[in-house]
Length: 447
Image (cartoon, rainbow, N blue to C red; front, side):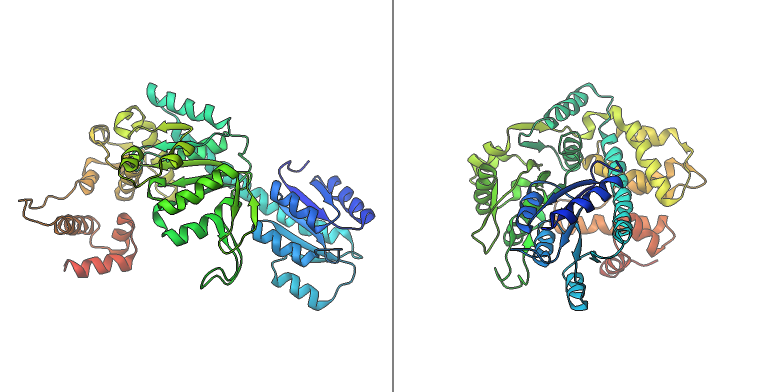
């Protein structure tokens, strides 16, 4: 078997041809299933993840082009090959326009089809390897020397084996999405989609469209059908970050989805069943929000079957060294720098600092230290760039003015440290060169 996770669904009402093709592809090492109609194929695709669909064009009921469209609507990552006994240019062009990977004539040598599938399989192997490598690297951040943090990691591992809803609590930057990804990759759903949505980043109307999808014509600008994140996460895991920022009206709709495990697209009255594992996260106190009438109590009790509270970095500083080593190795590889020495004063600083921005801030500090390192050495002088610049604070400034003053001094410090190179400074600050130039003009910063 080439790969037990590479599934191909053959859709053809000609039993003899379907059976023969299935046998050939099974010999090639692929995992094959067959159905006799497009309608049966849709039921399969809704319940199971396939990497490819090979469908006949002319069938009773729904034809191959219609199946192509509906398949890509459910999952745009599935590759579809359309087959026919009667090749014509218009039908081939139509199939390709609708999103088909290729067009195969049944009378041709099956080697052509096998070669086409082989190309898709090779790309799949690369993407799967990348995904596994990513998961391994991300999950390596959950290796701890702290006794209490180890208990939390173990709790997440045990929860992963179940299908219960989980809510992750913790300050911004503690690694809630890393934990969510860890739970997914340790679960029976690990080979299925992991879909993340930031509820804070989207307006109410956009968020609902993202979650549930919409039908063509449902609202101005809805020029085509679109599947939502729930359907994309079908058989996998849906991670809703910043859940406390979800509007009350959306909470009501989501409560129903969680209870019924089915959704209705915006502008449609058709109910679609969905199978998902729900993980949510927030850095806010939901209990306080409930008291303020800003969060539904019934929704909270529906999503908090298991609560995992992730501590801030300052409470597990035993992990500073291992985390720094991982971040330095990654940054060094990206920047093509070799770091062989870190001065003791640097380690002292890293262990004493409290990291209000937690692991996210720590990672940014390490990356900047690597940027400024010279001759493979991270020195105490490189730490100066991370100190918050002093500014007058006499209590008579607005918060906006105070922030602007700090931002100006910080940009000046980074520019000076980097010999006023706009490109390098923008890289350190994590903004574009154009954004930096706008800041320089706004604050009238001069070399």
